[in-house]
Length: 210
Image 1 (cartoon, rainbow, N blue to C red):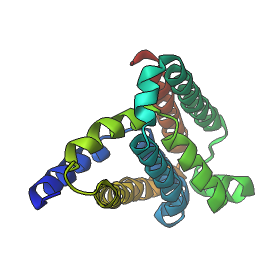
Image 2: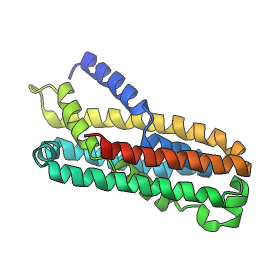
Image 3: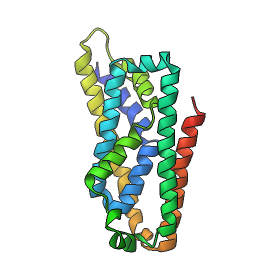
C-alpha cells in the first residue's frame, strides 16, 4: 500500500465515520448524561464491536452473508429491534426526567457502571450487520494484492480505529456541552424524546433498507 492509497483511505473513512448514525447519537446521549470521560467506556464498546466486525469481514463472512440473505435479514431485523427498544426506553424515560442533576442524584442506577456503558456501546455498534458487508466491500479496494495482506489489514484497521475514536470524542464532547442545558427538566424531557425518536427511526430505517 502506497502513501497515496492510504491518504485516500483516510479521507474516505473520515467522511464515512463522521456521518451521524446510531453510534454517534449514542456518544452525544452518553456525553450529555455521563460526561465525555465516562463515555470513553462507551467508545471502547463501540470500537471493539466495529473492529470485530471488520475482522469478520476480512475472514469472509461478508461473502457468506451475501450468499445467505435469510441469515443477513435475521441479523438486520434483530439489530433494528434492539435500536427500537433502546429508543423506546429512552423515550419512556422522558416522563421521569427531572433535570440532569436531580435525575442522577435521585437514582444511583442512572449513573451506569463503565461495564454497562461499554456493553451498551458494543450492542449498538454491532446492531447493524451491514457494517460487515461495508467493510468487505471497502477494505479490498485499498489492499495491494501483490503485497502481504495481514500487515495492510492491520494498517487499515488501526487507521480506522484512530479516526473513529476521534469522531467519538467530537460527538461526546458536543453532548457534554449540552449537559448544562439538561439541568432544566423540560429540556431534559425534550432531549430524551428526540434521542429516543431518532433511535427508533434508525431501527425503522434498518428494516426498510436492504
